[in-house]
Length: 534
Image (cartoon, rainbow, N blue to C red):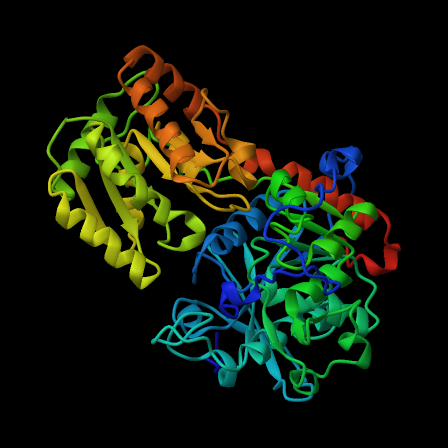
């Protein structure tokens, strides 16, 4: 096999600025009204006639078939697969070590030169069992390492992350220009989150007119680096301007994607509105509001893959449906035994989440005594910030038989918890989309969530779950108590479960807004730039 290789952004809290992108100081509350996307309905629900099949290059730092850190990996595995029913899609991914170890029949299809401090690379192609084509950026110096795509084994960001992901972006821009892939040239390029955000910018600076789409999965992770890195990245002088990627004396990969892409999407409609305000805009609300005014920003809610089917999921102890609950009770018994809980006493609440401040874990800890005193039980699976991991373990130590905690993550265990629990706790401070609430609904576990981002778009309060608005323990506890009251009314509980199980959208439903947006962007491109028809 030929040699080849594989950021986490800088710390998210370092990226969230109390200034807008013009450098003006703002308070930590919403001082401006969000841009009203519904004023432009064609952005949210564009209606275009179907067009011919086109080539799409989907650029990402994660693909759950090989490597996954968060929801981006799931998104990148699911969306291209449903898109390829209408388009010819290739995914472009760094050739990390863990990717290469799992690749079969990888073949080299081209090579690309370096630029400044960015080393040259080869492009490999592998076709997965279901026909999805994945191109790998092969650069051993940058990618063939132990650790995650973004960090080393000690949890430290790779110091050359700016070069590692600039290499991915530059390769994407070169392929968009018809180089490096044996003549395969896309008609549209879809980049995702800060690691691939320089793609539209490099395309613009290289004179490539192929339309580009940039999806923001989490605005707080911006991929910041020092201005001095501009020489290493081979950036033109215009890149250092405030209109491009300069951000408070640093360079922001994310801002470059926002500034140069032809269109920007986020992963829910509510989040698309929220990020145009100082409260949620992470210092970029000004440029995002401008994009709304230009009709270049919209929100499309994520779907989930078809494997989330309680009647046939092989991960579950027993399968079940809205007409047959015995299997759900079997999963509950498994969770009770697995986490050492006293059986059958009170509602079972679940936390399936990264244990980080953004997810509101501190709020769950704050209300836990009241939840337990009301007869509830709690299980938690996930890992995250050391202080929150320690606090969750201490909670379990203080309440044996009522609280069970596992630090870490396992897909099978998580699915069994969704299936066996009565309620899922999601008091997120912000949530661009969120998938856990959709998984829980599929498995008849009612989400209790803060009314923000995708949670607001996917949960109907009092019908498929419970929502609360204020970022306070009391508001959260009120919603929990509402849920406990429903638990003690079996007919209402079952009715809500049935509604919840019918609510989630699978990717086969969610893909059409992307198809329409792709066709719209492609329609405005000269035929010669749209790639070879398939």
